[in-house]
Image 1 (spheres, helix red, strand yellow):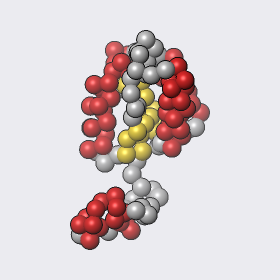
Image 2 (cartoon, helix red, strand yellow; image 1 turned 90 degrees about the vertical axis):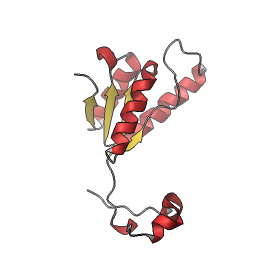
Image 3 (cartoon, one colour; image 1 turned 180 degrees about the vertical axis):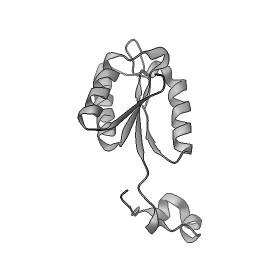
Image 4 (tube, one colour; image 1 turned 30 degrees about the vertical axis):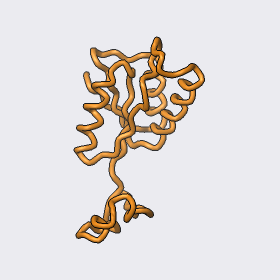
Length: 127
């Protein structure tokens, strides 16, 4: 695994943590996971984000509800969110699909195909 040294470690961890026994020079790059799935399952996104983060992963999630029929964002904003989410996948080591009840919509299918094309690990909440 690659090592990394955060440039802003003192800012990221606070002065106390930076001066404690934490040696930021020996930290390994954590595993990075992007959550994918329909934003109608926001509760499941939050649970997965919490669990995976507490396991020591860096987790990218969704910003807001943007599934079809949601009035949270405009069509233009939805396109922007999709582009940003694909970048999160590109930066990740794997994607974790929130497929409640086995549901995988068209947007999530494209994200899974993109992840597989890039050689990313793809795991699912449900078989």
